Image (cartoon, rainbow, N blue to C red; front, top):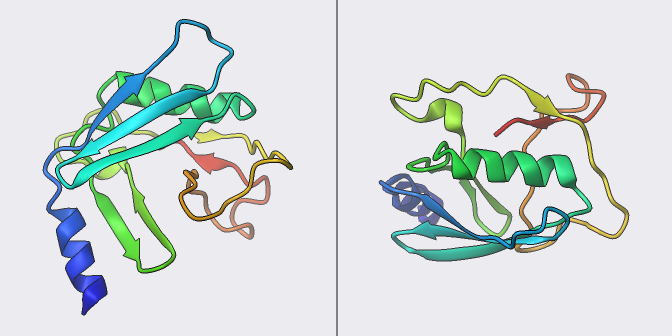
Length: 131
């Protein structure tokens, strides 16, 4: 029941505006603020994953992430959102993948931002979804 309420709460997001706090130098980690009507989420895009960082910033700056929803919520595990292709009226379909950028010093833990990808049996190169 809690999970259903959380899903409904996140799906009710009518506007997800991504505001970027950017420095002028290309070779820096970026602090990104994801603004929702329920509060802000601050994440860091690391320079050690340059293709993922560049892709996220490109989609954020173009407004593609605006008004996307959190479409999957699993209590005590994760939330998933930012599916540009599911956004009503979107004409900019994302049909590309990004090469894997695994870094030994970066790992998933509570609060980490990660890119979605298909399972290994479908995606042996472990490429990330474009959005």
